[in-house]
Length: 225
Image 1 (cartoon, rainbow, N blue to C red):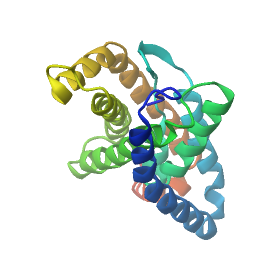
Image 2 (cartoon, rainbow, N blue to C red):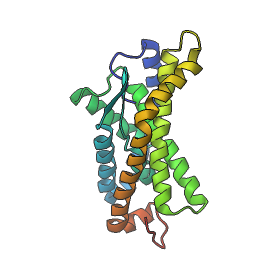
Image 3 (tube, rainbow, N blue to C red):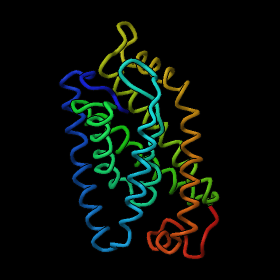
């Protein structure tokens, strides 16, 4: 994610913006409903948003036109569901584009789609699958956060490959090149993000146990993260 300003062709930039718009609308509706029904969850929502902002701002140069960094969306997706992260991620990416020159306005839709839509949906799917097969809670959180990070970068690689297919091998060859370049930095970052998310979740389990049980993140019998 965080494809830089003006890097994508206009048609691609518009297309990804259109694709992201319905998820943002659904996310705003989801957040408004959750907060109106459970105003005490505002603090957790703020924690999730801050976690996403801080981690995704730690960029490392990866390939021309993009960057590698943690995403921070796995925590919020586990807490509030995947749709809630679309508007949260959108705000995070907008502020980073305006204040940190990280990403861009024209590429905002593409960056939202990879980091704030694909990543969160992957995180929730992985977390629920891991808990369904009775993996330990901590392992479920780690897998959800780290693999969602990698799914985000696979999406970014696909977006760049679609915009800039290889002259001879087309999309598959270009996708393989982008994935290969990203993997050098992103696999270690994804592992680190998994551990950082687990550390924060451990703190939430300790100090916000009741809220997490009401949100059905942890079982009512309690859990050791």
